[in-house]
Length: 90
Image 1 (tube, one colour):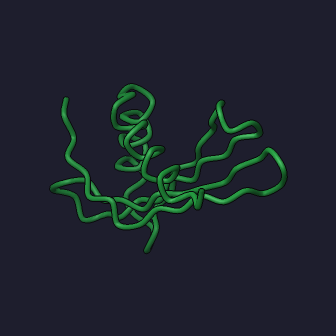
Image 2 (cartoon, helix red, strand yellow):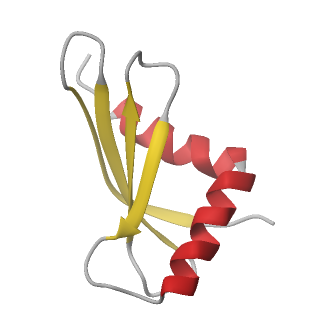
């Protein structure tokens, strides 16, 4: 399933010498909810994430569907991670 997303904003910063924290705010086509995915890495290679609504609480089922989509769609996940990485000041 191809999901079209609109990236609203993205950022990435270093927490210490090796750790990174970043986020991407996005919306999917046809949905009113705005999501924020926060990425965390201790080495800049292996990433964990946390997904939540940005503006206001939304439908919990909708959030769970988006989380499942991120787990199963590497292209979507990488698109969101790449947006945050590209925002990192080199």
